[in-house]
Length: 229
Ligand code: 5RP
Image (cartoon, rainbow, N blue to C red; front, top):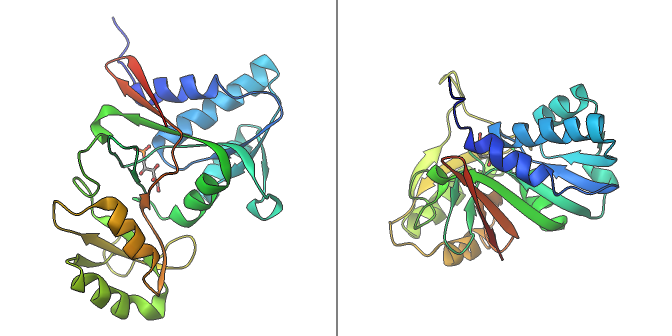
């Protein structure tokens, strides 16, 4: 019986093979990042790879520690060698949408501080425009949500506060922010929107990752395409 192709795992294994001894490696969050953590731990155990990691979330930190990886606090770092994470959407120009989870503040900090940022996706994540498949998550200071929502509506945004998983309250990010999930017109330029969101008071962080990825690994039907900046 043939084994089912797992493109997320394949790209994670390929990226983990590029990790070198003594690197400081940032761990992303999500199912693809989990495969990367697993493979990094395997290399540490079976190939005597020496690596220090820093995590973008409590959950990834727990997974990494359980598998024997050394995880240091983000507060102790001024830079890292490599950050590896998944994404929800990837465009031709390597702009990303992230943050379907609730850890995008740390994710963007690590992506920005890292010499290299590898993004691991299967081809279902490729889009023509950011926002094609998902609303854009925008973390806001809790007391500012209404003013931020109003500003975003004035530039064509439609959406509102993200409910929690049970649907009986609001989602709160790991940073303690509320999250606005916003849709914009189909043709909206993601670079311009990135700048507008960066300049909106009350916005803590948002899910557009522009000019940060250095390599994208795209898995499709057992094959891997690599796009470099
Ligand atoms: C979390 C993220 C994830 O990387 C993104 O949602 C992809 O997840 P998965 O690897 O499970 O498809 O941005 O904030």
